[in-house]
Length: 262
Image 1 (tube, rainbow, N blue to C red):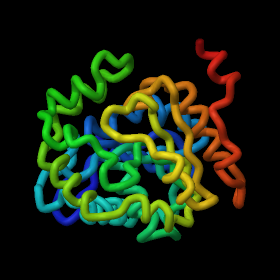
Image 2 (cartoon, one colour; image 1 turned 90 degrees about the vertical axis):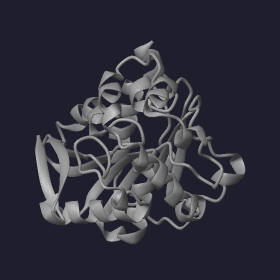
Image 3 (cartoon, one colour; image 1 turned 120 degrees about the horizontal axis):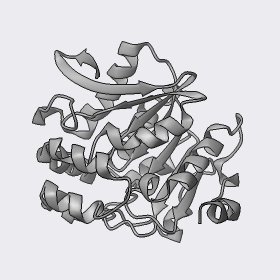
């Protein structure tokens, strides 16, 4: 287990591979661990880092660090501690909001982002996410999902306050406006059957900048990286290999990917 000390508190992370640095940020249920298959898929060309945010996994748990600003500050200090100047960022749920906020605050540090399940708008998060117990969240969002054992095993480590206080922070910001102000190339991914995050409407999509693009996974719920891992990993690889100035709007879920894994 790899750890760094930030402000006298322990931050847990893991790393795979060599090459350009990628940072993976987890969501509200689970920890860094459910990213392992995706990290393995890119580790031949990239150095993939995944860390546990404050209140999750094996990182320290203190309610005064559970605000969105504190999680963004954690990412900033973590990069500084490791001496990493620029990253590609892959976030999910809470990690997607943290990544978006970080890229707006420190645009020079982020080359591109792939954000899964980013809530766009004030009412796009199901209130059950904040009210349900950890056991209920595991059943609701993971159910019998194949490949979700790591997320199920890690979810009980979550401090429930880390979920509720982060949601309170997010309620105070306009994520749609933040996404509209973004200059960093950004690929947004949504599971069509996600019960926790409402998919953006056509009107919402029209407010996004030209360097942003949205792709829907038809057979996925809240965890597209686990529901449809082959397609997710292929899409991530194609996004990461886009050249400078190339728009993510040229990316699609190609039919040949779907046929290949049926």
